[in-house]
Amino acid sequence: MLFKKRKKKKVKEVLTLPRLDRRILSNVPDPENIRMMDDRRGSLDNESSKNIASKDIEKFRTFNLRYEASFDVILVKKGQKKKGKIKAKAVDISSTGLLIELNENVDPFELGAEVIARFNIPSGTMPEGFESKVKINATTIRIFEKNDKQMMAIQFEKPLTEYFQKKRWGYSVYTASAFLFVAVLFVMLLRVESIIYFKYNLLLYLYSLIAAAFLLTRYLFGAFYRDVPINPNYTPGVSIIIPCFNEEEWISRTILSCINQDYPVDKLEVIVVDDRSTDGTVKEIEKTIEMVHREADRFMTKERLKMHVLPVNGGKREALVQGVDMAKHDLVVFVDSDSFLDPSAIQHIVQPFQDPRMGGVAGRTEVENKFTNMLTKLQTVRYYVAFRIMKAAESWFDSVTCLSGPLSCYRKDLILKHKDAWLNQKFLGQPATFGDDRSMTNYILQTHRTGYQDQAVCSTIVPSDMNVFLKQQMRWKRSWLRESLRAGSFIWKKEPFMALFFYIGLIVPIAAPVVVLYNLVYVPLLHHIFPGTFLMGLLLMAMLMSLAHLFFRKSKLWVFGFYFCIFYEFVLLWQMPIAWFTFWKSTWGTRETPQDVEAKNKKEARKRKNKLSKDIQLPL
View 1 (cartoon, helix red, strand yellow):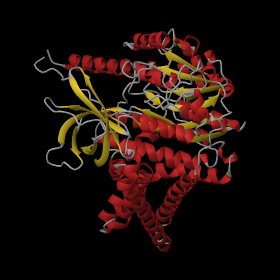
View 2: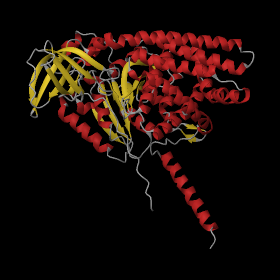
View 3: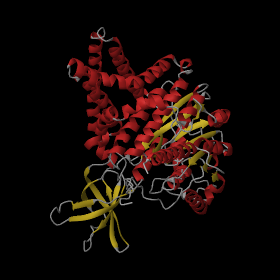
């Protein structure tokens, strides 16, 4: 061949990297009370934890967690602006201080010196919302040498959280609140126009009214939502199941985040189930487990952390069921193999189960690689609104319709009750190989409540490649259609208001492509009318998403809500008609399931057959 197909270069993910603690399980409660003082990385000894409220423990962790950094810092000694100036490089940063590496032949300030620190925190260095310019008073608290480099640590006069609250975050909340009010007001005024013109096109303006009412109520009930508070006396046994297939890059971090939980040692276990990975995943799992056993044996890790490799590739559901069969506790938590739990995620997600009618609970999923490129930034805003607004609104009625795969918790007996139906589920004769989270949620919803805990947080790696992202979205739309049709057969038995909006939420996305074509193509071409009202409505919907993200997250990424809405209208929306006619398909498109292999073989067979037919027809 004259030209070889170039291998597509893999996108380099931009991740926020906490500096590793010297202890591998720094957040696990110490059963032997060896820790006698608060750790500078944010861990507390048992006695300290008993005397501090859970929200204060979270604040303590936030203040002390340090992140790897590499950006320029200028320090100016107070009262000596010309002579007392140092240029240096940040090594790591926390909300309370900064560690810097001094340039050669530069003398550090003396201990206790009062300085003014100026720097710009790059995107991805700290959690979302911290990316900004900073000018803050500080004090030198430590000077030392490391690898022949002069190091200096400074402590901020006030935590960055307090600094940003006055400098930027407070303004963000006020601005978002004002514009949200204006956006909602304009949406309502546009709907008044729809009522006026209702007689001219009943279906179009009825759709407009219903869609607006659906969206506004989601935001309303999402605003009313509150977490179930932590009851320190409620710590049921939990088994975390991690299904895994070809996840060599992320699986170690996932395992460590699951075992390193602020939860009683005797009430938490982690089970990793590998679905016959074809890369180095199994070796990475074994390496991680061996390290944990070696360095944290006193935390009973040999009894609490184990792995199981399936004899043949059976799919994600088979891996999850195998893990549930091995679980010894009454609650099971499903965690995707590229998702990472916050230290208090399990503590938060179990709280709704104090209600015996609660069958499953979803946590909040955030984007881990949010700063990689524009595609991941779009998903960051979308994910947050989907969880904090949409799932929170459903939780108001105890009827969350999808307990998402990255982090969800179930009663073990309910999983075992439905496991055979779940494993053998078919739709129009085809095995249901994806949409496992929506499918199990449907089984649970038929007899129990489902909820959402916003403070049970995990982060996940989202697609940063457009081709992978589009395949994922198509798969999600197919599973949404399939499982929504299933849910529609019983959801009417739930709370009436919730049931009504479920059916509206089913109709609106399905009809959306037709409505968009009518407004943006049919009306302008046939009636020569510019679709100003429709475009204004689209802009207002985008404003609601963006401003909600700004209100809650106080992040500069809020503007990507606008971009997402545009991208959805002109790209993702048109996957829906394809999904209408192909929602029975069972191929993933992004992993080698048996169904994908079968589809691939059939495609190659057709190519060989077509090539053979062409060769036969060629003249001698």
